[in-house]
Image (cartoon, rainbow, N blue to C red; front, side, top):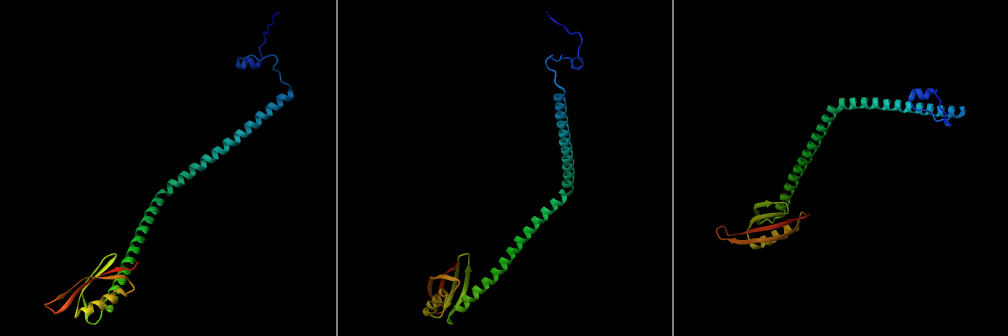
Amino acid sequence: MTRFNYLSSRFERAFGVPVPAHAGLSRSSQIALAAAALLVAVLAGMQIGRFHAVASESAALAERRAAIAPALDDLRRVEAEVRRLGAMAAADRTVRRSGTLRANEVAAIGNALPADAWLTGLRVDAATVAVDGRGARLHAVAETLDALAALRSVSSARLVSVRHDPLRADVVYSIAMERRR
């Protein structure tokens, strides 16, 4: 025999789907299901509230960042300028110190020369110092070479050339010195 139920339930009228006859839940099960759904709804509401709070904080921070962006750009330009000026000051100190060092080096070379030898030229580069000069006799050139080799700023000295100048009746010499590192 086939049965027909001509009365539709509220669920069937609302959603258009009939509820199976065996799906009836006990009252305690229905209360537990409702409590769980309420708990999920409350937790979802709290999370949505937290999300809106974080979103509003993020928007406020973005506004503050946009407000300080020009000042930050100015600060970066000033920092770059300070670095550039610091490099220039360091280069200036190096140049000033090198002038004093070179003057002391030339003075030490002049002070090391024997009485009968003198300088006519001085060439300086990064690694060597070349000295040209004259001496009253050949022995003065040997004394000059020994004196220049004994300087603290010189690691080695070598005689590049020596010749007798018949017009002045003296000796012309050239000495190259390696700088101590």
